Image (cartoon, rainbow, N blue to C red; front, side, top):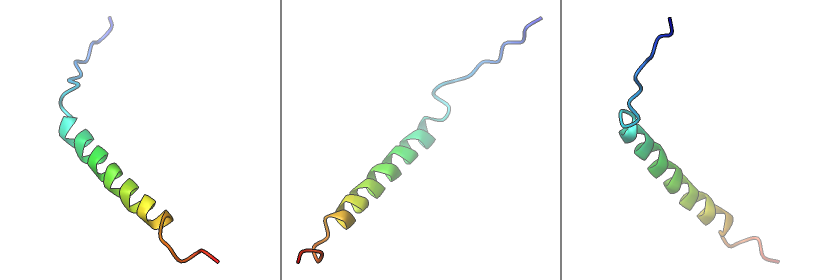
Length: 41
């Protein structure tokens, strides 16, 4: 017989939000780093 495991898609919602927020913060810092002046000749 097949076994059915119940997966709650809302269990990891907190972790997903933390990952999303950390990714957005890192993206902002990365864009700021790329737009940093000092490379213009």
